[in-house]
Image (cartoon, rainbow, N blue to C red):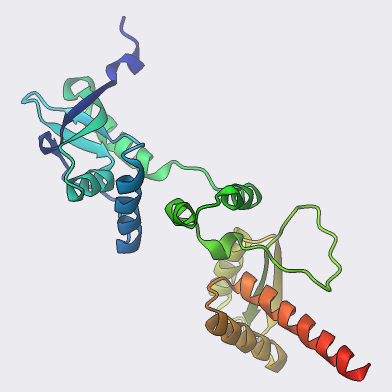
Length: 235
């Protein structure tokens, strides 16, 4: 009996023989798509699309719609694909494979991600990697005494009003932020906290920082610089 994995084959086929699926739930921003086109232009198609072949000899995309469009934009004549005959797949399996290719992926270990990104020397290939710098930017702890079990950590503040009218929304924010950080601080939205939030927003705009955690780290850095200036003035 033929093994189930033997159904899948590799071929290099004319790009004009490949059609997109009628439905595809996976979407990509214009910025990400432009980066994908640029990456394929630089390094070629290193991740193969997945298709099934119809009885008439044409192929239908299962996974890799954006890569197909990018290759067409770059005027590719042929591309390599992994494919299976339509007769060897049920309709349920085709849809399930497509959805799984779009949804099954792991989460990055931020510490390892930062190390790997730092190993890239070329600015062009740092751009190629398409990593959100704010998510992995090292946090300066100069002048701060910190004992951490991990090499790095993310600190987030959630401010909330002295009212429980929006308690469901508050819990949603807490759950969402807890997934992204190691330390989560809850604070009433009183004058001091509002002043802190305003400072973070101003710092983010001034230094073009998107991450609240990095904005907070920059706030500590600026505060430390100011304290050092005061000490020098007093001496």
